[in-house]
Length: 278
Image 1 (spheres, rainbow, N blue to C red):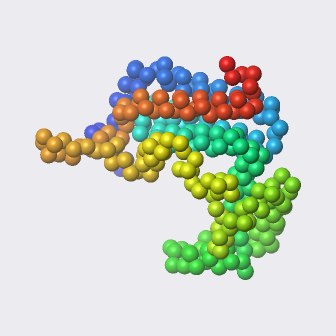
Image 2 (image 1 turned 90 degrees about the horizontal axis):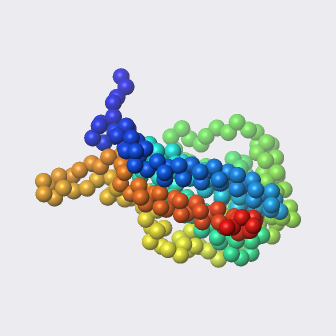
Image 3 (image 1 turned 90 degrees about the vertical axis):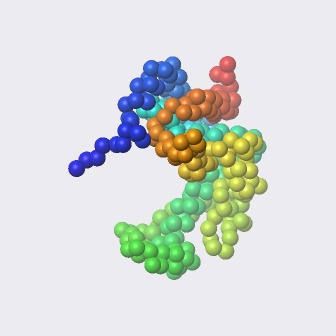
């Protein structure tokens, strides 16, 4: 029999109505920024060299920023304010990534993320190719796992052909130099470093100028913010379960999501459509 949500913890109607009544202009701005971003990507890409760095910056990072902003728009309309914070964290990180790529060595830094994705796909293909060290390491790692290693609906020849295809991408003139930088840093395990490490950055946190914001978003994303979920009523010696949906911190959600979205858009405009900066 279907269950009904506990009203004290989840009232789907209450906060949705309150949001609509109190924050209609802000919600409309979120929607307009999403709409603006979808068109901006097309304009910027058409004005760019349409190479690998542009593909990464625009169709990878800026598009993901718009995806996160769209999710925030949907969530905040429903009163799911706390669920917005992982998406704000995404906007924050994309702002860091794009700013870092555009700051220096644009061609190589932009290509690094593309190369890293290919190398990651290649690594998992090698995990299913018998006779490779990746296959042996994966088999040992999966030892005793429920159900054992997953069945792969591809032959060894098909897996090898896929690896050869990825190798071809990594050896082309646009990617070979950056790929060699990764090769120099690969550990004995065969697992790659993160995409930014060949250029002297050891972590995303290392890119962040404002560590306090990074820590705040990290806690909300990984479920470590206990004060977002409950509080103590000292007078009555009670633990109070907070609502899953809430208006608490909605001002922060609007401020930060709008601010980071505009920053990301501004980075793209300054790089590819300088005539639109005003």
